[in-house]
Image (tube, rainbow, N blue to C red; front, top):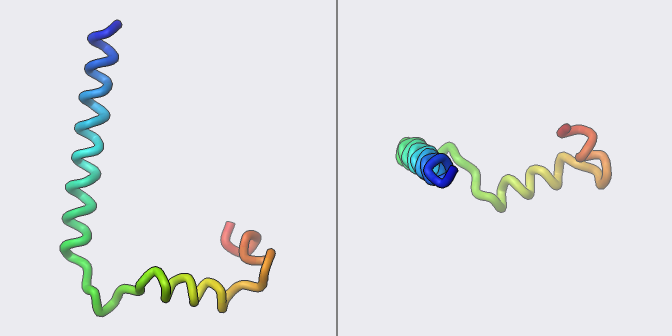
Length: 59
């Protein structure tokens, strides 16, 4: 049983590393002139939503 748990932990670590590598590859290819900051995204979201209706609109 311990071997199976250790194996699963290694598999999880490997998947985390794969995900991290993919994120690094994607981020390195981003055109910063075409991206929005978090502040800009939040501002646009606030402009588009009336309180309590955003949840229904974006589900």
